[in-house]
Figure (spheres, one colour):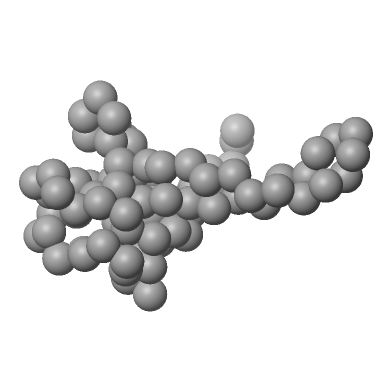
Length: 85
């Protein structure tokens, strides 16, 4: 590109709730997604759990948080807790 314009980064953010805080500097966040069956058009809920980095261990079970995708921190942790709602 001849003109040096900054491209806007698409940041993957997900909203969910903390379901486990038993690991050191890690929380497990459950994210609910509503899907529609392609043939029958029935809506159903699917839940996915993500391990997210929490530096100060300040998030407890039941907290609503937003996580953001970052460079892999460990084998399973690819998200970081962005803020608490």
